[in-house]
Length: 552
Image (cartoon, rainbow, N blue to C red):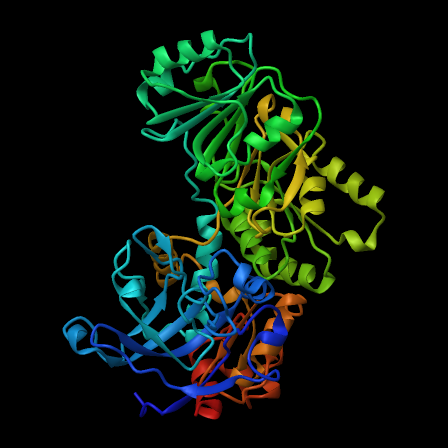
């Protein structure tokens, strides 16, 4: 490893908005941090740029993963899709780590259940060097670093985290039973009787809160569950629950009760349901892992178990709104390449260049699997014409809709096309608290489900790394542009405005490498085409030549 300098370049976030990112649209020159005996100093070899970084910068302290109360005084360095090499090892870690080791990082770091996400709460990879402390090295999942083979280019390794988020979206484990020893809320109507049922007998809650029930109904539930109920006249303002059952109430009360879920809550609707659409916190489906389900019964257990899945329906019909964007392309590739995936796929995207790129990239596999594949640009047609395309392709509605556009009105429009036992995966990160109207009857009577997830776990990243190492996944297909430290902000602007049909990766220690599409590598690297593979993809040889020219 090269000599560690005294100074480095970094892009701290000093507040809210891009004007607070860096100084005067340039990175800051800061001291290379010192480490303690139980810490590592790593050089950031590559950092992937993500729309989540854009959302972080736009949100500042209000972002749910930021722990700094005042970024102007306590800034954070963003960047979570990092590839790194160890350059200095603390004395207490000498037997565990050595200089030169190369890692990727699982950014969703937890310590005693509290989140300390890398690039949000812990200074991340938009810097030339980074300190990894015990939160990273010894958190709730153990060490959040995974070793990377030397033959894998850093620009490709930087794509493993976003690929993992895509993989994890189809590995969501929503509960099919009540949470044992959890908190249960039952909201009903006086005069009706409610039963807990078999599943609650097998998975007894630790507490029971009821609202709206008469004395006889409360006593019946208490006897069945063996619990003393906390009877409230109005819904709690701040308390959160693991399982919620709301029945026979007006739309306003039903909607309010549905927003009282703890992380991973299951919310059930039963009895007589409001006829109108309800305003749901669709952002928390993504960020809090809420799961909505329903039943026409007043038996709490009867709602559990229908259409609880996260994988795309085998042989089904799938719509991917935004399916040609940087992350959308990955979802579309997975849907096409999955031998047990859908047989009919519709992709909609507002950028024709990105659509053409996806069609070219996946043409051979589409033909091999015999998929009926349609890609359309809604901006080239009237709203009525676009609706006709959707209705003609899936007249009974889609089995799966993967929401890759973080816009509530688009989500609401798309939800209307969900078929019986259909599943909408809200992958795009609509902010928690953002509400949209959804059809409650479609959930309760037709088995429609809305799921979502944010980030991934170390096991998910390990799975993706194995797929890439064994050749079962070719992550480089998502690489669209590269650049150096001075152009990092330009790269984020390109991400925010969907300039490239894929992912952008920055080399922090290549300060002056211009932001360049992979298709135009020859403009910055002589004989670039000779380094690419037979399909025209970036290789280790490409990266070696780039680093020889630009790395300092």
